[in-house]
Amino acid sequence: MSGNGNAAATAEENSPKMRVIRVGTRKSQLARIQTDSVVATLKALYPGLQFEIIAMSTTGDKILDTALSKIGEKSLFTKELEHALEKNEVDLVVHSLKDLPTVLPPGFTIGAICKRENPHDAVVFHPKFVGKTLETLPEKSVVGTSSLRRAAQLQRKFSHLEFRSIRGNLNTRLRKLDEQQEFSAIILATAGLQRMGWHNRVGQILHPDECMYAVGQGALGVEVRAKDQDILDLVGVLHDPETLLRCIAERAFLRHLEGGCSVPVAVHTAMKDGQLYLTGGVWSLDGSDSIQDTMQATIHVPAQHEDGPEDDPQLVGITARNIPRGPQLAAQNLGISLANLLLSKGAKNILDVARQLNDAH
Image (tube, rainbow, N blue to C red):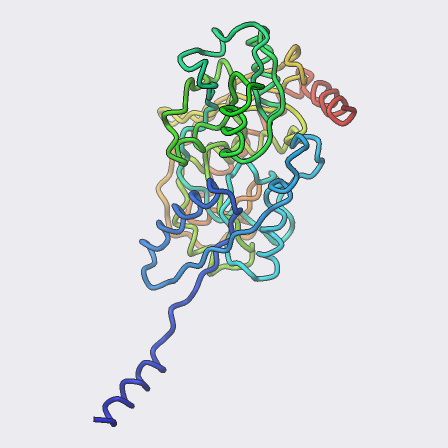
């Protein structure tokens, strides 16, 4: 009897332990929900692996009394997570793609871009204004937004309203809206509200004619070490080809303009009948000056394929070895071409002035 017990114990000791993949995330409820959704997909794809989620606070989570555009740090919501990635404390990090700069620090890459949710902005109204729209809010109503991009576009469109900075995670901002009398409405990303299950708070979804969205908005990006081929292969299956191509075009546009969160730059992309349409715009801080245009390119959304490694796989910080290279390059070229068109029409001057004004205040 005792012999059988020893044999069982030995077999257990010799059985291979499940490999643990450590996943980094911000601590906010939304970040956790987003990370949980990515991990759930990976668990279904790789039942033989274990996943451990490690949550941490970032600079952007800690500095809550200053507008994002004033902090002067490109990687507000990513730096601490990248530090953990660099020190091998985590194997991959889940981000909102719009938080990831178009130029990543050396040694990192975006190994997957998941299927995009609704990228448009939404208006959430104070309970006493439910049923209104921005257009029908009373004169001088105050609307909260932490984004120069939103404020510039909406001031231009809704000149009867006043736009004021509001910071904090989604829960904090909604509490400020509901419990204080300062704001009549706030502007948030539709995707975040939907992921939190707060569909009932969406009072109005803004059409691109009213407010174009941020580069990468609504999509999740999985950041990994650029040389960690094992993890790159692991997460690469999460790439959604259409989202990937749209976001490559958007990020190439922003990178070529040298834009960031300290200047108002916005986009709108659509894929239809083998054409990728990219609309992009730049605005002065008060929205009075703007340049917008649209370009398109013939790009067929490819299926994933098993290709060999490329020499230099990264495009605007993204590695997608399992998606054909041609469509990726075409998307990048579309973004660069539209940026060049806007620059030829005077976009650099608008952005330079916006930067200077933002720095001065």
